[in-house]
Length: 409
Image (cartoon, rainbow, N blue to C red; front, side, top):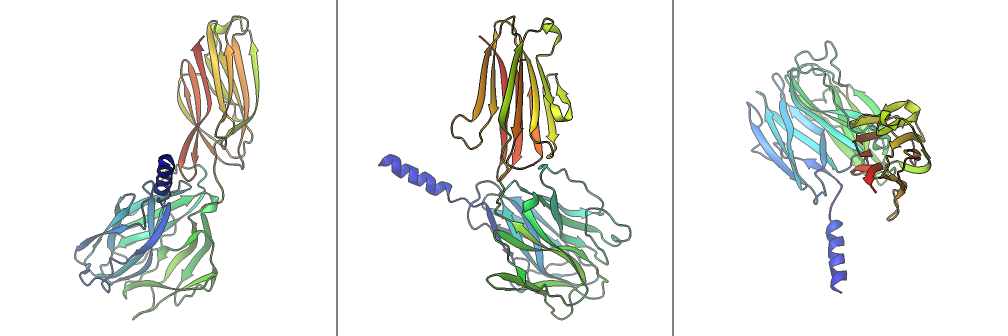
């Protein structure tokens, strides 16, 4: 009975974690907080709590749903300064003229199939390059977070365009990238006046985001933008509302962002293997290990740590591994064959070495449920070879798919 009670408690605690969350930041609205008088260097810090605790520190990004900034020398700095498992913190500071309203919709996700990169408050805007970790992250979007001294600019990609950055003293943005399933982008909308999205079919297990990507601001009126939503059970629509003046001409994308995925990324599995043993007379001249990735003719023979990216077109992945098997030693080889198995996950081989059979070969074939890029870490040492498959799924997985050891008998 005590064991059962303990099990129930553990299950309850484990299931308490969340893996995605969303909400609104209204802390930077003077209509909500009269003390928010954001001008002349005024700054404010706001901490937003998640609906429950994440298992890991999530990735967080936000988009603008409304802002109202006074003309002339306008702009503000805005950044996420801290993220924990239970909350995140933002800080805003304003230039000379007042920012009356800045309303944000935030998204938090604990899933490695989406990556969030930020470049907050970049002075003297210029090109910037990001190193994407997940090789299968092949789609994404850029969302503007803030700017200063806006006069006229259009910012629709991470490349500086001549004439578009004039009078733009600083800018901030998110780069959000992910696997193919991560985003449904309905396209760029260029708005010069009143705008209505019309009904958009709600996509299951996805958030809707209005991703601001450009503004055309002549500095004659306040900079204003605000979304008003109308929802039904099956559709979503929004309009740019008008208060005092029409909205600032802008470009934005309509993006559905997945917070639950149907496609699961798993490590490579060995589904077939051929082995060989033979006598080599000049064994001393050969390296201890020879690893060949056959389709790309990539060969490793020297001790060290290496990384290699296998193209998704290569399936099945063919390897050739040759190992010196000197008299009095033995070889232990383990290859990942079953990701879903609770036992017998590996295909294992053991060979005792002797003079007549001193060179052992392994020729495995690896495959996955669907084509994907594969990040391999290769660790070759004097008595061991280890190949790790790095997988970006809901969590980061580093699975050993090949481990060969030379041991004493």
